[in-house]
Amino acid sequence: MLKRDELFKAFEQSNYWDELIIHLECSNNADVVHIVLDSGIEYTFHKCYKVDFLHDISYPKGLKNEYYLQNVELEIINQYYKEFYKTILSGWPMKLIIISEDITIAINKHKD
Image (cartoon, rainbow, N blue to C red; front, top):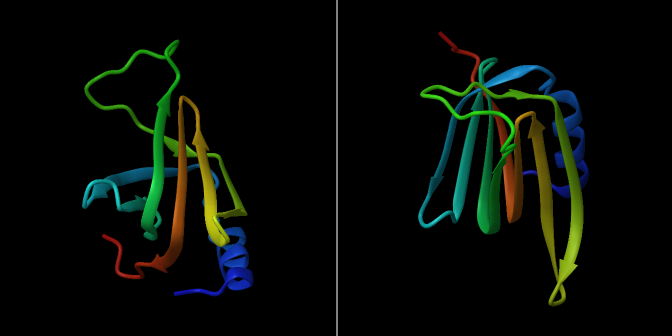
């Protein structure tokens, strides 16, 4: 698991711009959110307290909506004397807002 400054740097260096989100999964009652990008980058959010998946109502949903990541915002918020990560991942028509205790970033070098 990365320290705070390393995490900010890892997001900046992950070259997520225009990457297709090929997998997005919430597990353990949305306690864990796992996102995989086409390039093999994987973001995993642990101990999630808020997970909001927003889809622009003006854009019709189909059988297979594709989302390309355009922006990642990461900030530290303090609640109840504890630090949490607030992450906003945007790729119109989708926006994902996650508040979690920890985040891991991995690169799968054996992408098919």
